[in-house]
Length: 225
Image (cartoon, rainbow, N blue to C red):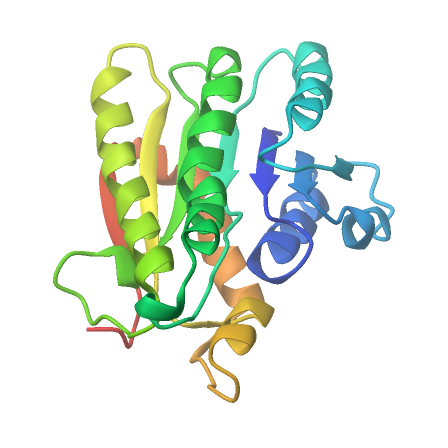
């Protein structure tokens, strides 16, 4: 059984991943600003506490858990922030908030967890088709999509830097998935995939994908050109 850390677990894909991993017997550290939905699961295989990617105190709590684990087998950078707003109407404060979660937060937690990971470990970062060069782009998503492009490049860089020692790094660019975040950004839009189905795909990829890929971007979309 694996030791797994997942960010962005209060709802949507992250919440479903925690359920699925823990039901299979894996030990999961679920990190989200709102820990209550995970605590309500009352799973003996899950550790959860309120976690803010921009908070030093949260990282002190994370370190305490890491000190009690021999290794971390999988880190899934799933937390995300999305603002749908015309570029000329967006404040730089809102732009920076998206980057704080989607880019700097990913870098910060990856840096904190890497010393606990070995050659067989796997870091999976959840990106978006909107961050893929040449894919369809949508007005209003300047901050979100550009930040998701940034973590694609980060993944490639980390895979090169740690190719001798591990772990492996891969990034999944997701198409539309029916989540609360999607509903908030695009009210009324119906996505072709459920959060549960996508969580199952990411779970399986996180457990086995490092056997086949390192430093790779995989486009996980049946609809987005």
